Length: 135
Image (cartoon, rainbow, N blue to C red):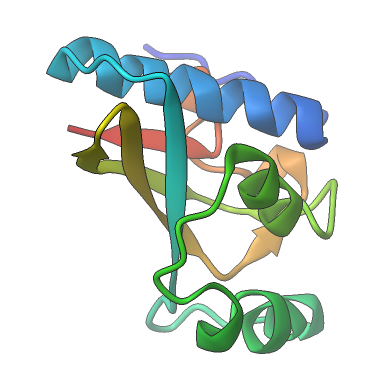
């Protein structure tokens, strides 16, 4: 039986550490070597999952196509965007390796539009919630 540890805290430092752990997991499995990474954020509207006011505000403003659509963002910009409502962050985030551009790895972050408190985050079994490496 797997015992899932509840996440009690989420801030930019914890979020950064968990994202970097996920990137490392993907890099080891795929044998990637790079000196920098960029991120494309792809918000996912989940069927039958209602959004609250904060979720809608993020969807319409911060995570809008005009603001982030297909842009390759730095680590810091990505963290600032997704932690804009800290301690609320997307309830789940899938991390996909997309491409290499010289020594820069490009990752896609498919994320829920539902921003929730740390105790509700998914993928706790990975040890780096809310992230899940998709390899």
